[in-house]
Length: 394
Ligand SMILES: Cc1ncc(C[n+]2csc(CCOP(=O)(O)OP(=O)(O)O)c2C)c(N)n1
Ligand code: SF4
Ligand SMILES: [Mg+2]
Image 1 (cartoon, rainbow, N blue to C red):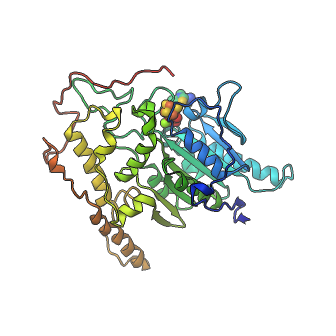
Image 2 (image 1 turned 90 degrees about the horizontal axis):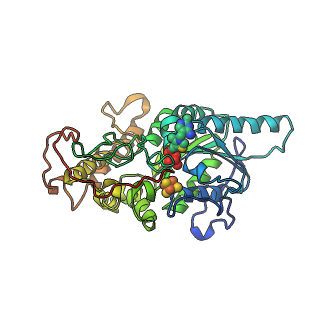
Image 3 (image 1 turned 30 degrees about the vertical axis):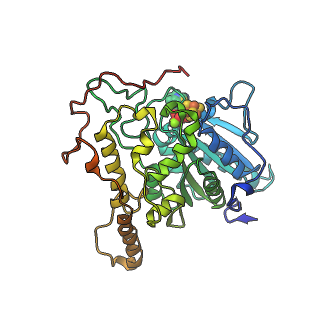
């Protein structure tokens, strides 16, 4: 059955036992052990099925997947330039449409998925993705796999690298402990706010595979331009034992750092554990549980954990929708018949007070004051970084 706009209609999978057995991204790749950027490729291809063309920008998911004469891709796959996921998706979708219109190929719905890393998508290719999301006549999914660094070129800082994390561009030193001083860009929220014609936007992680696959299916069935942001723990860049990849993906959600949601037809729904937190059915875990399992935060002192926690608490308590809209509404609520909608949004915000960090307060962190925290100006010294990342020269 086809959805409007010549999109395939793909039903939700709902349970892992009901996931299709066929694989369209198989063995034959050379990613690191425990790589959660490779797993979303497999899940995304499985969810999309055989009538799919995948395009991918330069990065780990290009280099490690296309070693000479070997590839895991079963569906047609094409490499595209590092910042070009958006333009490659539009070009491919437009090309298919033209060939079908001219009778040069069978007229049928075909999924077009363009993946990109956080460097290629959230930084370099943001303009092309933005343009693609306004092209309502084409069906396409931009799938951003976010391993929070330019991983393939040896873990450089990207716009998605978390505050304080060690990368090859942000090593802690004796004078300055915190070298990554920028807060992570809210890319799916930014794209949702600025592209009202986008049919579907969602966040996911391969650590919650059914949720991720069902969001891929919802995107491909939406009929129009769509976007998915997928958080992928990376053992090499985040510096942890590969066996903890799945656990870290889940902890990112349980601590509230990475909210899960989907936006369709102008309605945002928090999903999974994020929804449970927002409804007060579950408490957020302290961010420290997530951060201290990763070598890239091994230099953190108490005030660093406290600062990180404060930023996440702010997101949950002060944003209009946690993880999505980074501000709230301060005007009258009866403008242009929008009263009900605004009221609903304020309810979301009020509900946020249920989800404060029970059993945890900022004060419990030693040495934390109310003064603005400026880590690059303080005199935090460290003699030696205990967990220096090895350079692989990849
Ligand atoms: C225009 C351009 N600049 C720089 C490079 C070098 N380069 C290749 S892969 C890569 C990292 C890409 O990072 P990301 O998109 O996050 O993907 P990841 O490697 O993390 O999977 C870089 C900088 C390139 N190929 N093209
Ligand atoms: S560096 Fe990270 S993203 Fe790249 S292959 Fe290794 S684990 Fe995967
Ligand atoms: Mg990356």
